[in-house]
Length: 396
Ligand SMILES: Cc1cc2nc3c(=O)[nH]c(=O)nc-3n(C[C@H](O)[C@H](O)[C@H](O)COP(=O)(O)OP(=O)(O)OC[C@H]3O[C@@H](n4cnc5c(N)ncnc54)[C@H](O)[C@@H]3O)c2cc1C
Image (tube, rainbow, N blue to C red; front, side, top):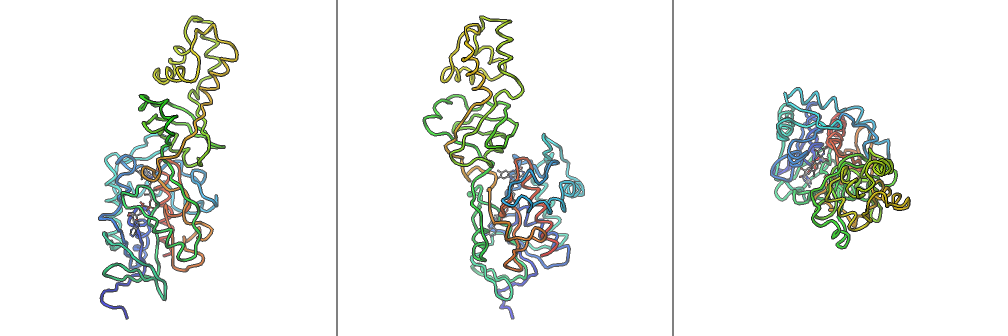
């Protein structure tokens, strides 16, 4: 017999973000009494700030290789059972206009609020109850799951942890999901801020004074991984989509190699210019292809500027190496304060890739970013939230 300040549901989802709401909708549609518990004052806060307020809600190119996970097979099944096309159908059902910005990235034409409204409407239709401003203090498992808040106890047969990762703590991100996993003797991998700008040490940063805002189309490489996109010099280091992407593959101490002229062959350009205009200075020749302020600084600090015809083969080699193979050694990243996601999370070895249920704790499910599944920049992380949430919703 439950006391009056106790409420019982078939399913309780902790976290009213993308994954949790998707899971709740599916559970509700199956006739399961479902409650979503959200500690913030409203649902979908991260969705609202995503994609610069327009929500890059999925990507046409979402596929297993666009995600990182210690088990490279774990996420395959869910991504194939609920695809980007499935989510686009849901968007179209709600009459939301969208467009492809670049590289398969799908954005709302109006704003991200449309996605939150869609999720709220689907929850309403499926009879899902949502409680905001609700902070769970403790989680127990006896015959069912018991969740304790300051004034009420909730009970559920299935408990879904959809509490997200650690990025943007000022929006309320916490390690709650990892604590629950550990409490139920599940493993959590190492974590780091990802999709995040790099910061330079004080001395190296001085070299870039006055250059912040400069953007260049590059390829950026760390280890065996390469991305082709823009980089942006900031007042703390470097950012831009190519840097955010590579940050997920970077570990402290790693060097990052940037090709500043990925479509050109610097050696050929120099040889051609020597023939055409031998008196031209090398930095003037290079400034035709890269921002002048940046090139000026490079020659001021690291290379010797002189007329093209005076360049020795060794100097040409050094110049080519610099522009095609610029090595930077970030001191750190900006951390969770500005990171879009957490790399790592609840170890997927302990989770069923079909149902998302814990292998050693029946009735306990983990979905979305709290898991050790991290997508590239460009709508991949929300697609993971939709896919994992949808699949778990069929079983909870
Ligand atoms: C600035 C920014 C921009 C982004 N832009 C994009 C984008 O355009 N496209 C894309 O694909 N991805 C984007 N991402 C990443 C994406 O938003 C996340 O990967 C995704 O929202 C994760 O969904 P989730 O449901 O797992 O977690 P979240 O969306 O983080 O939701 C978790 C929810 O759980 C709640 N919660 C946490 N602990 C508790 C608790 N103890 N009790 C109750 N509730 C709790 C939180 O308040 C939160 O609402 C962006 C991220 C950031 C930070």
